[in-house]
Image (tube, rainbow, N blue to C red):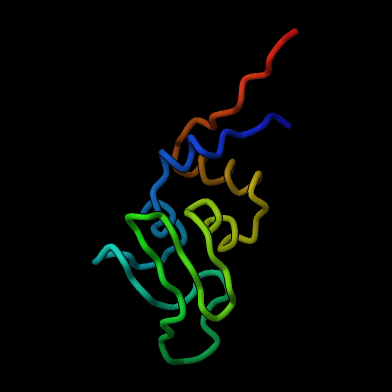
Length: 105
């Protein structure tokens, strides 16, 4: 498997891109709370255990402990490993996957 240049993808993909793809409302404010898209909401009432910083591209759930950047969120919400999830994310957004160049001897 060719190595993915994750840093390049994180520079291209925003938290807003990911939130939109996973169906999480991020309409207002740079920091927002709500139900966790990773573990779901196990009650009828709205939960505020999930916190997202859209400008900083970070998230954290204070219930299930999930946290990380926009790639982590996409993969966790879709139950994918980072490699496969990153390829899926790039394909869905129409972004060319930046692979590391293989050095030839």
